Length: 225
Ligand SMILES: NC(=O)c1ccc[n+]([C@@H]2O[C@H](COP(=O)([O-])OP(=O)(O)OC[C@H]3O[C@@H](n4cnc5c(N)ncnc54)[C@H](OP(=O)(O)O)[C@@H]3O)[C@@H](O)[C@H]2O)c1
Image 1 (spheres, rainbow, N blue to C red):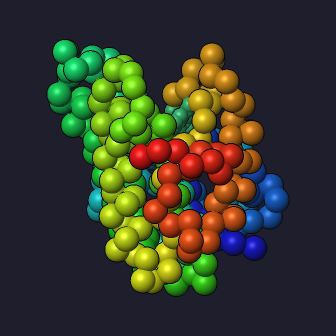
Image 2: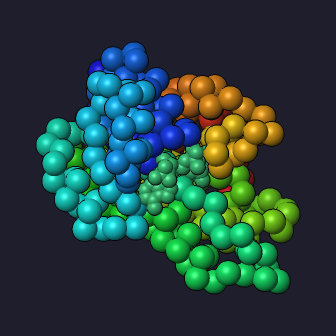
C-alpha cells in the first residue's frame, strides 16, 4: 500500500483520483482549498486524510505539510485553473495571467518544495505534475495563451526538478490527463474522468528512475516537449 498525496482534490481529476485510490485501499492524503471542497472530498473518499490550502499560499502549504508525518510515495500536483477570459496574444488580461502563473506554474512547485522532505523518505518516490498537452512547445494553435504559457513553464520546472532530484532517486514527470469531461474540460471533452484517472494511476504506479524527466499522457505515451 502506497501513500499518495493529491493536491487539488475538491472536484474533477483530483477528486476522482482520491476516490479511486481510497476505494482500493491505498493510503491517501488529499487537499482542497475551501470548506465545500473538503466536504466533497470527504464524501467521495471517506478514508482519505485531508488538508486545506490554496496553492498560491506558501505559508498555508507549509503548515499543511507540517501536519503529515509519514513518507509520501506519490505526490500528484493536480490543482490548476484555466485563467482569464481575455488571454490571446493580441488581447491579454495581464493581471489574470500572472495569477494563473501563480496557480499553474509555481503552485505545483510550492507544493513539491513543502512536501519534498516527506517524498524523499519514500523508498520509491515519484512526483507527477499535472501539465497539459497545451503546454507543449511543439503544438500549434493560438488559443488560451496564458494557459499554454503556464503549462509550458510548468514543463520547464519539471525538467529542472527532475535533474536536480535525479541523484536522490526522486522520479519527476509532467502528465497530460487527456481531454477530460470536468468543469475545466467541459461537456464536449472526449474522455470520462474515470478512464483518465485510471490511466494516470497506472502510469504513476509503473514509473521507475528511467522515466524521470518525461512528459507523458494518461496512457503512458510520450509527448514532445
Ligand atoms: N480537464 C482537462 O481536459 C484537462 C486537460 C489537460 C490538463 N488538465 C489539468 O488537470 C488538472 C485538473 O483539471 P480538472 O479538469 O480536474 O479541472 P477542474 O475540474 O476545474 O478542477 C480543478 C481543481 O484545481 C483546484 N484549484 C484551482 N485553483 C486552485 C488554487 N489556487 N489552489 C488550490 N486548488 C486549486 C480546484 O479547486 P476548487 O474547487 O477550490 O476551485 C479543483 O480541485 C489541472 O491542472 C488542469 O490544468 C485538465
